[in-house]
Image 1 (tube, rainbow, N blue to C red):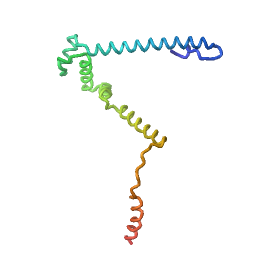
Image 2: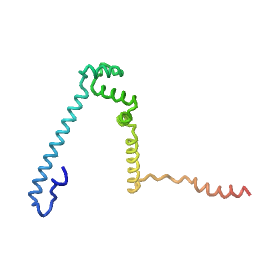
Image 3: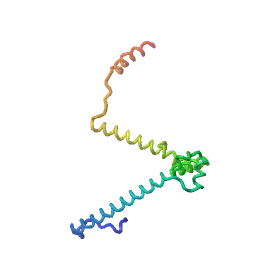
Image 4: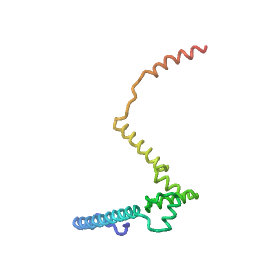
Length: 150
């Protein structure tokens, strides 16, 4: 999809043509979504499959992966850890991202919290702290405290 193949709804295009083009776009979108879902399903199945390559199997076993849990997913994670341990910064970032300790994850959580607080404030749902009289008590005693120094 790019700007050159998009046809805007204008007076040049009849309503019927626009509907026909909309249907074509919807069908194509559905095809793409189904293809992506299928790819995701195949990838998931392959990641959970038992390792059949001796080289990959031995490499993951050397990293301590349990032979009963020797899947491609476990082998990939073992290889990622091996790269991170050798100083590969991109591998370290990927591991942090997987386990949810990357800065982006924390930043997004904080932004969501701030947004929720702003929405509450704007809608009037903000929690009000009850007045316990502390500030009034300080006001009276502060004058006395300052006068005691003379």
